[in-house]
Every structure is written in structure tokens, then in C-alpha cells.
Image 1 (cartoon, rainbow, N blue to C red):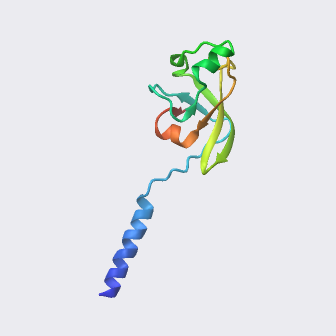
Image 2: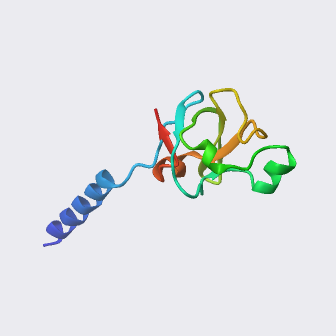
Image 3: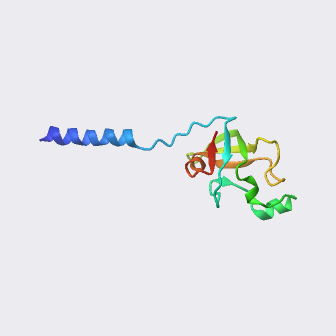
Length: 116
């Protein structure tokens, strides 16, 4: 009886390990992504409207939808992968910011970034 219970517990443990979701996203410097079309970007750290306007930019968040971006650096902060991205077209985000940071794994999961 003990062997059956032990076997069942081990079986449940190992099957839960094999079916658990793997959140390890392999992102390298130079990878290309497309900015997804969502209403609210929670994991892409876009500047606030007043900072964009103060630096002479145009605060139109609709303009970045569908743009291709490139990963320029990756850092780990508090267990999350934080990547710095820039536009492939060599232009600036909102005509004011050259780089933007993003929580890469959460942005991919929420379809804010779509890999090419």
C-alpha cells in the first residue's frame, strides 16, 4: 500500500514537472521583434506624454504599433529579463527617445512583442 502511494506521488510530481509552463525565453542581443497592437502597454516602459512633449516629441502611442525593434542589451533585474530595444529604422520613438526598456518575457507572453 505504501509503495502504491509513493509511486502515485512520484508520478504526479514528475508529470507536473513535465507539463509545467516553461517561461525561459531565449532572447539574444540583435533579435528582432514587432510591437504588437494592444491598447495598453504594461510591460514596455514607454515614456509618459509630458516627457515626450518636453523633449519635443509627438505623443502618439498609435505610431509605434507594428514597428520593428531590435534588442540592444539584456539585464536581469529582480528575476526578470529587462531588455533595451531600439527601432530598426534608426529613428527615435516619438521623435524624442532613442531607446526604451521592456520586460521581455512578460511582453512576449502578453503579445506586446511578437518575435520575427
